[in-house]
Amino acid sequence: MRSLQFSPEPDRLDQEPLDAYSRAVIRAVQTVGPAVAKIEVTKRPPRTSARQRRREERPDNGGAGGSGFVFTPDGLVLTNSHVVENAARLVVTLPDGRAADADLVGNDPETDLAVLKITARDPAVVALGDSSRLAAGQLVVAVGNPYGLQHTVTAGVVSALGRSLRARSGRLMDNIIQTDAALNPGNSGGPLVDTRGRVVGVNTAMILGGQGLSFAVPINTARLVIPALLRDGCVRRSYIGIGVQDVQPLRRALRFFHLPAESGVLVVSVEPGSPAAVAGLRDGDILIGWSGTPVAGADDLHRVLNAEQIGRPAEMTLIRGAQQLRLSIVPGEVPRP
Figure 1 (cartoon, rainbow, N blue to C red):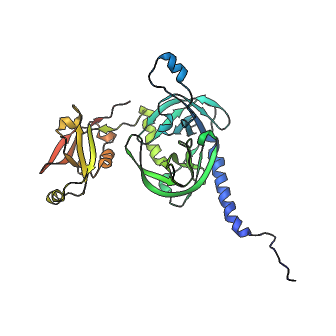
Figure 2: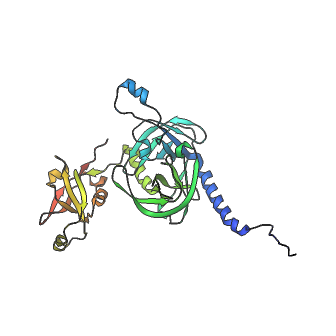
């Protein structure tokens, strides 16, 4: 009878890559985990009497709150703007069990980032990486508190780079990281890290009903936003006071005016007294350029209306009927909430 022989170490070579993968994830979690915080939010109730306010203010555990991470030794915490939206009270709990009330230092809904400040002695701090060095297929790890389950770890790869994602304010966020590391409500604001435990993104969104479609704000975007939040409590942006929608001009207009883009921005409303009204912009105008830069849609217009444009004269190129016009405009500053 023929006997069967078994290897004393079955599939040893097949297990080695898995072991390396596990070690990489474990190392990343051990590095960043001590600085990942749970954020509990008491929502501000609708405007009511003081007695009703005291009775109705409560932590919203059905989706409010989320995650964050300490990034400076003096207790600054980075998280998502939508996590702290309309918050009456913020409580940050560290992995070692310490809990502290947090102050909102700054908030930018346009990039979905916010900075909090806690008082805690010698908190663990994350190291910030460089999101510009990420590559599709690279292993990344997400740490957060989905559904209040503290310190939950998921891992995956960078699915794509340079994605665009619509913020709750309607403005388009650029250069978003797409990953298949699973995210759930409560992960928002937590870190996305590389295998060395360096933060490369701030987890911000997932597509409900999708499989492995999660998104993070690049940490390089946060590096640009944080100084403004610490200095001003917000990110200053310019505005001109118009309502717009994307539109495609008639082909004969494209040919006649030799336009570089096949679409523009249709002005559907002009706020009285706004910079646009002062400049002479009218309903029905099609904006196609800003100081020599083509404007092919509302998102292009949002990109040029940054803080540098506040109070700085610019030239708009537009189509009005059968005419191509150039109007001078001086953008104002978006009012602070």
